[in-house]
Length: 138
Image 1 (tube, rainbow, N blue to C red):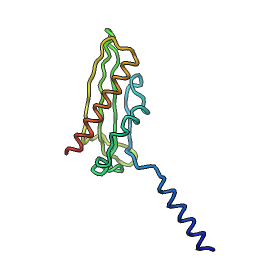
Image 2 (cartoon, one colour):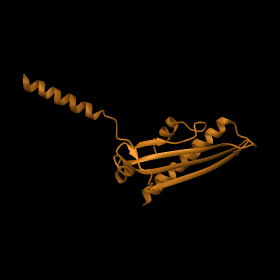
Image 3 (cartoon, rainbow, N blue to C red):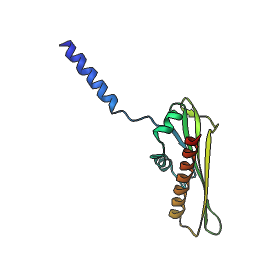
Image 4 (cartoon, helix red, strand yellow):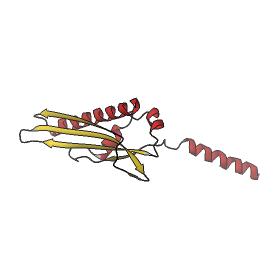
């Protein structure tokens, strides 16, 4: 009877491990709230972080930083700078010694706020893709 109980407990423990969330990078967003919120920046990494990248740059040793800055000038010109960085981890924090940085710039004349936010997302995606592909080429 004790053996059956032990076996059942072991089986349940293994089942719960198989449903555990996959490891992910510590990701920090340092953006202008008007253009990008932290949830959108976190979501933009999905699909860009390949198993090959995670093998070369392990999740426990590296993290990601995104920055989207900009806004409107007097002529309603939307100006956006988006940056993506891979930084070393120190416990639960990141150390600002980027192994790779990629930056994308964009402008859109006469843009609405929603158009400027869409430009910010597009430029962040460009920076992320450039950073990941550069890291994989090294």
